[in-house]
Image 1 (cartoon, rainbow, N blue to C red):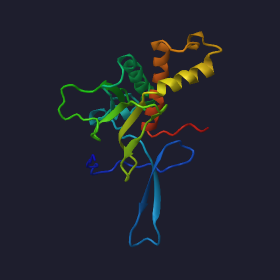
Image 2 (image 1 turned 45 degrees about the vertical axis):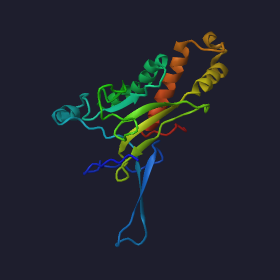
Image 3 (image 1 turned 135 degrees about the vertical axis):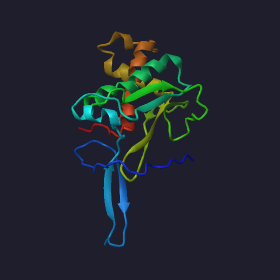
Image 4 (image 1 turned 135 degrees about the horizontal axis):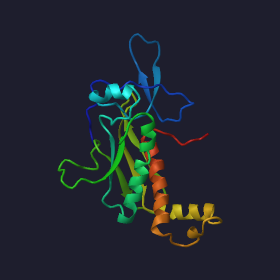
Length: 214
């Protein structure tokens, strides 16, 4: 178990709306004054705030760095030839954050080598972890403050055999127009670009976004 003290002052929550494709964090409230329970649905999202010294610039529309960027650490067991592509997939989301006024809001790093407090099982750290399994999948869960929907931590689970799924997808879907996927084993650039797509997709889930069912 990993236990974390929540912020004394919760982030301002945003109520769910079906027009907005976010995961939600339902909260049931009870009190003596109620005649029945009260259900609130907060969307899950990260707490992005400008530094106090940058607040004025931010309100004027300038791009600033957040107080606390989102940092994803890449598992040491991830094959070296895929790490740069996964990092690019994570940081592809920087463009979206820049649209709302934050630069360097999400960054990818290797596991720290000189931090004795670092532990990928510690809820204070968001990690992109590899699982050796025949399952052809990947997933991006997150943990959120139930009082507000603030995402505290996210993880991406990179199932090693997703390599096979990506090969089959790209072969079936694009081989008629893309000669480089007409082979049993992709070159690193082709497979790496597929893994970059997966990284961007799963990080989207850890940011609170559902699949785009539109």
